[in-house]
Amino acid sequence: MRARNNLGNWGPADHFKVRLENCDDHDGCYRYGSGCEERDYFCKGGKCKHSTTNKHTDYYGNWVSYCKGCKGDEVWRHRRFHDYYCEEGKCTAHGSWTDDQLVENCSDYDCWQDTGKTQWVTTKEYDCRTEQKEEKEQEFRDFFCTAGECSFKVTETKRVETGRTRTVNKPNGTVCGCTANSTLKKCLAGVCLDTGVCNTTYCGADLGCDGKKPGDACGGGAGAGYKCSPACKCVPNRPPVAAFTYSPLNAAVVNETVTFDGSNSTDGDGFIVRYEWDFGDGEGTTTSTTENWATHRYSSAGQYRVNLTVTDNDGAKSATAIWLTVWVKGDLDGDGSATMSDLHLVAGMVVGTVDWGGGLRARADFNENGRVDVGDAAKLLGFVKGGEGCL
Image 1: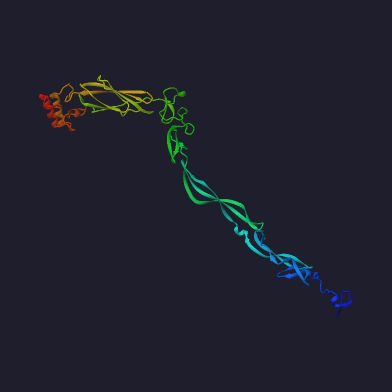
Image 2: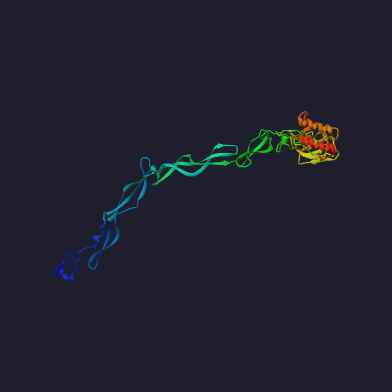
């Protein structure tokens, strides 16, 4: 059998090798699924085989957000489509953006938003308390798109009421005014109270009385014996005025109790601290720093000069005296003993022919029933005639 070799010469077939194909001629780009692949062909086992050097499939990239809209306040997204195909024997990628989608309109989020800040605002103010309401801060957030997402800027702020109210006491000790007497008033538990202390700065008190109470010594340039008046003026101390009464009125009798009352004594710019009594019978004096009254019994009839001396808180004194007549019981005519003459006076009082004035009624009421009657006349008669009974 004869065959022609590659040079065109004829010869025995078993003397020649015939090249049927060149595998390299098949190198190139081939379709692969939705893309392409590059193949490198080589001869193996008398056949052309290939290996793949680049294999690509069409695919979509990740979503990418971007801003869009007439105001640039819309968030859109799209993704890139990578399209692989053969071009000049190679796998070539061509990309394009696709699937544009509106994600959100940032303007939809424009709003007034609480900032979390609050404050209390005074609506009414009184001497020692305030009425308050609560306000919260809000800001207007103007949303826009930037770098593919919604952001905002604050364009305006305002305060709105929350509906909550409260009453707040001013701190204790806050100055809240003055009295008509120039003493300072301060707050305590929401109430404006008089401290009773004179004040020069706020209330116009005399300088010597500043920080002192009415009745306190002010001294200083005013000199000794000066004190703060009820109106917080530094004035000379006024002495007290002594005054007293006694009972029973015009009916004091031997060995019976007489009560003296000094409660009518006064001190216009302070107070009385001492009452000293002299009852005029040589039995000494009675002194008290707490009681304005005293009692005493006289052992014999007669007239006595009773004296009361009072001392005020600044040491000033005042005295007054009253003449007191002490009678023998039953002696209505003042002759020193109970006689028939006195009985005639009692009888006259019983029938209404004798005036009861001048303390006679009290001295003639021997049975102490509050009136002069037959019982009193009978009691006096028994005493006068034979000392029967006692008066």
